[in-house]
Image (cartoon, rainbow, N blue to C red; front, side, top):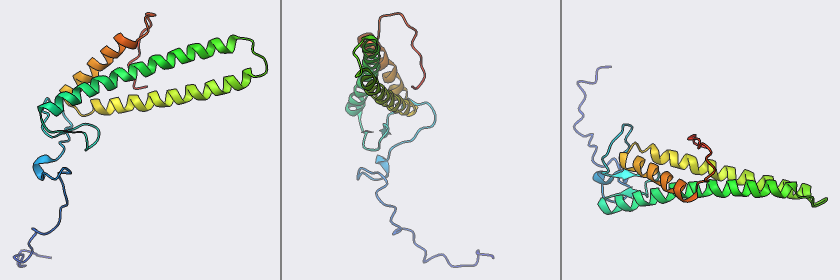
Length: 164
């Protein structure tokens, strides 16, 4: 069908209702940018959630400091997990009688919950990194460095870099 002869003059698109595309009431200039390539640009940077929207230098600095704290917290969780596992294995070696099986089951559930928390946390950090923003990536690295210095074991064990 040839549409070249049809009159499109009455087909105004001004009232199509595109909604609040900026999510912040600021219109098109306030939309979250979604980069799939590495960038240092922080204009309209949203970090994981659209509510975590960097709108200027001050919010960028606070966001980067929050990322450092989040990543250091991950290392704290990992160290707490290691300590609990060590404590738990020492408890299993003690002769405590018939209650030993119940204590072992409870410890296994706690270890599973800690593992789930670590896995969730690691993937959230991966999402931070996947903003493809250089400032965020550097903050993740600094946060893991700070966390390892503060909470890492000093046993000389090699650290893995997997997500979980």
